[in-house]
Amino acid sequence: MNRLRYSLLRLLFIAQNTLREAVRQKIFILLLVLALGLVAGAQFFREFHFGSHELKFLTDVGFGAMAGFGAVLAVVATAQLFFSEIERRTILTLLAKPVWRAEFVLGKFAGVAVLTAVFCGGLTALLAGVLWVRESALMRELPDAFAGGGMISYAQVALVGLLQWVKLLLLSALTLLVASYAQTQLFTVVMGFVVWVSCHLQHLAQAASARGGASAARVIMGWAAHVLHDFQVFNLGEILGGEKALPWSYLGRVLLYAGAYIVVGCALAVFCFRRREL
View 1 (tube, rainbow, N blue to C red):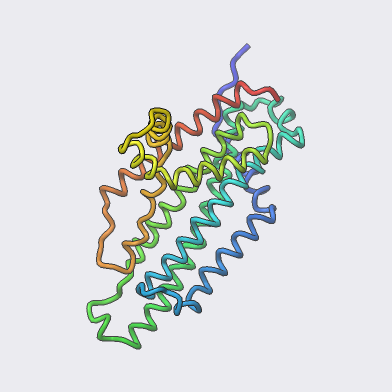
View 2 (view 1 turned 45 degrees about the horizontal axis):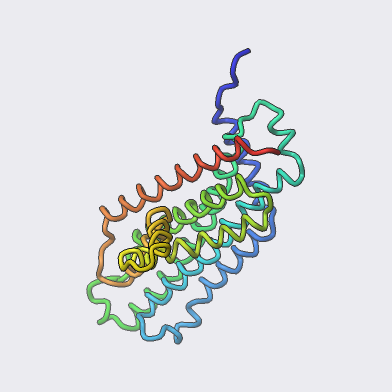
């Protein structure tokens, strides 16, 4: 008997169905509307910039909405779309056909990747529009302050939006890894948010591991510092609205760093799911 060959077309078909199901979910529409509303309405709360530059405040709100609502979308959508197939038992019908389990897992990840790309792309475009409108108004009101031209580099806005999307891809891959062996959707969602918080606090684990202390605590902190991804490397929004230029070499290292984690996370998810009892 000839062994079934791996097919990219089958993977894309699963990704297409995953994306179609994700768009139908109310949580995607709700989070997208909330995030778009927050970004679009940020200009009406300019008085609350707490001493920072007005345009810097708008970028912080925009990328903060993208990071916060995007994390909820990445974790919940990944868990729901994965476990919906198991709970409805449609996965048995799907895997009874010539479909690899690896194609199923990677197809689910690809569907969520497109979903988060639409989310981040829409918010980045809206944020760029809000910044352009407000910057144009400030240039008319305060021409002397903009004698050297505009303060915002919209190419950098797009690149920071890209980094936010890569971070959501990484979070989705780690959530998918949990889902590949977890028994319930609730556990996967909780652990997904635990991973999200832990990766944001990874720099604290590095500091605690460097200081030393009790042996057990040092081992735990050292493990966390070397295993978890540091989400702080994606926070480049502070360069916008200032005089700094985007460090291209740093950007390349961040993308390679995140890409390696995504590949390892998806590979481990495939490994665990292939040995899972359905």
